[in-house]
Amino acid sequence: MNDYDLLGHELRKALSDPSNYNNNHVSGQRKNRATAAATGDLFDDWVNELDFHDMVSSKEAKKEYFLTADDLANVRYEPIGGGFGIGPPTKCYLHEHLVKTSVRKHGRAGVVKKLEARHKREEKKRMRKEQAEQARKRLKTITNTAADGAAAAATATTMKASASDTQEVKRLRGGLLNMAKQNMGFEMSGSPKSWKIGVAGISKATFAALMGRPTDVDLESFVKNGAYYKEQYDASKLFGASEAQLTKDFNRECVTQNIGSTVSVRYKPSTMELSIGGYAEMYATMSYRLYGSSDF
Image (tube, rainbow, N blue to C red; front, side):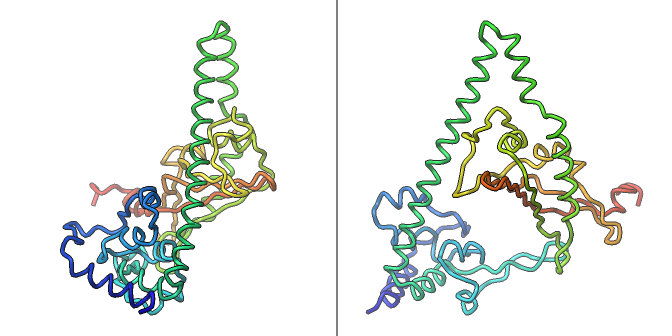
């Protein structure tokens, strides 16, 4: 019996066991991988991360099961969600089917190698996050200590000035917001499209200031992944704008879009390149905003 046949037998046995089913049928609630790694059996824990009947989106299917769009082409799926202004339905697959497809493609040994490699990456990422968090705490401690020292008045004034935006940073925030708005639009389905912008010539100090940590010019409090610093950040803070300023009117479509609450920021210090990406939501129809719902 090969790996695929053996796994099919194990899955059928597990599916016949009522204890493997819960009552809420919520997909995507994966078990703790740190615990999985501690047991030394990454494969079994990967198989049992979800209940076999749980549904998984196509995006997660590619990431978690090491599959491609071509691999998923012949896997049965369930369309979920979608609609006007939202986009097409999401293709969702059974965890059981994805596990079988992955093992059929890579073999059990191949899946184990990929799981081990992913575990190592996640451990390194966790360590980088811990180091960045410690650096943030040190920055906070230095700030608080300076304010309590003998030269508190002079030091507090200096640090307050350094923490506020320079005119250059203020102009940059406004320029980034204008660029983001220019890249907003619609998908063919009518839903708001994701947007992405890029700017060259951004120094470490400028990046730190944009991210609200102007004193961290060495970027010690940021998490670095490869050549990039990546972080999810509050859109209002990044653009220096209120929620109302994060909107764009589309007169022809008679709708207004709102930039999502968080944006993905990526910075490459070696080339001084900054890129920002985000999503948009339908904020309101323009007739609603102009006249108010109580007038009609």
